[in-house]
Amino acid sequence: SSAAIAAFVSMGSEWVEGDVAWAIAGVFAFLSIICTGHQIYMHLKNYSCPSQQKWIVRILFMVPIYALASWLGLHFFHLSIYFDTVRDVYEAFVIYNFLALCFEYLGGESAIMNAIKGRTNQPSWWTCTCCMKEFDYTPRFLRNCKQGTLQFCAVKPVMALVIIITSATGDYHEGDLSPQYGYLYVSIVYNTSITIALMALVLFYAATRDLLSPYQPVLKFLIVKSVIFLSFWQGVALAIAEKADIITSSENSTGGELAVAYQNFLICIEMFAASVMHFYAFPWRPYKHADGMRGRLASSSISRNLKATLSPADMIDDTIRNFSKAYAHYVSQGDDDSLEDQNEIRQQPGAQRQGGTLLDEPDHDFHEHDSVA
Image (cartoon, rainbow, N blue to C red; front, side, top):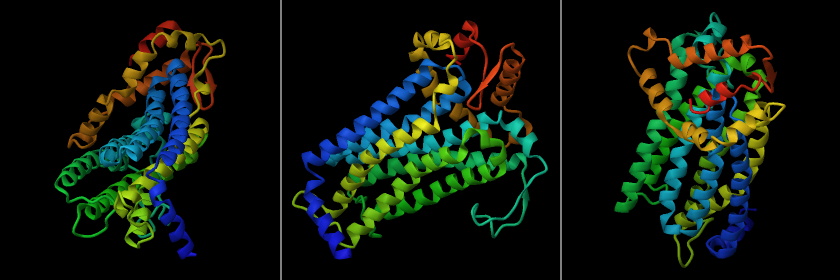
C-alpha cells in the first residue's frame, strides 16, 4: 500500500544520507568501474578497428562517469549539483556516439543512403509516426537523424549552465516541481530535447533495422536508452514522491535534497547492472586476432589510443557539417575514408569477419596508423 511505501521511505530518509548507504553505493559503483574499466582497457589494447571502437569506448565510459559522479554526489551532498552536471552532459555525448557507431557499422552516410534509397517510412505507432504521412528516406532524413542527436549535445550543456547559475542564486531547487523554481522548466526543456534525440534514433533504426541486424542493435539501443532515459524518469518519479510527501524532510536535508540522494544511490546500484549488460552488448573479443599479435602491439600505445578516442574533434566537425546550409553539396570525407578502409581490408589476403566486424590479418603498419587516427 501507499502507506507502507511512505513508511519505508520515511525510515530511509536519514539512512540514505548515512555512511552505510554511501558504503553500499561505493561497493556497487567501484565494481561497475572495475568491470567497465577492464572492458575499456581490452578494447584499447585490441584497437584493431578504430573507426568502430572509438565510439564503443566513448559509450562504455558512461558507466564509470555515472557511477563515480553519483557516488561522490551522495557523500558530498551540497556539491551534488556539480557532479550531476558532469554526468548529465556526458549522456548527451553518448546518444550522439551511439548513432555515429550505427553509421560506422553500415559504412557511413553514402553507403546507408545507397542501401535505403527507394524505401519509404511506413506510419507506425511504435516509431511514433502513426499520425504522419509516408515519407521517402533521403539524405535529408539522415541529416535530420543526426541533427536530432546533435541538438541534445548542445541543449544539455546549456541546461547544465542554467542549473549551476540558478542553483547559485537559489532559484533552482533540485527535485521541486513548483513553478516558482527553475527545476520544472529545466525538466521540460530537457525532456523535450532528449525525446527528440531518442526519436531520431528510433527512426534511424526503423529505416536500417535489417542492415543493422548482425550487430545486435536492439540490445545496444535498449541499454543506452535505459541508462539515460530511465534514469531521468526515475529522478522525476522521486521528485513527484517528494512533492506528494512520500519523501519527507530530515533534520539535515529537505525533501528535494533527499530525492536527489535516492537518485544517486540508485544509480550507483544500477551502474553495476549496466556494466554487466555492456559486456554483452559491446564485447571486445571480436576485435582480437587469434595469434594475439595485434593486442601486444596495442599494449604499447594504449594511451595514444585513449587520447584519440576521447578527442571531440569529430563531433564538432560533424555538428558544423550537419547544420551547414551546404550539407547537400558535400560528401562526408569521414564516410569516404570509412568505405575506402573497408574496401581496402576486403581486398587484403586473409581478411576475416569476426562478430560482425571485418578484420584483417595482423599488420604492424596498419595498427600504428589506425591507433592514432
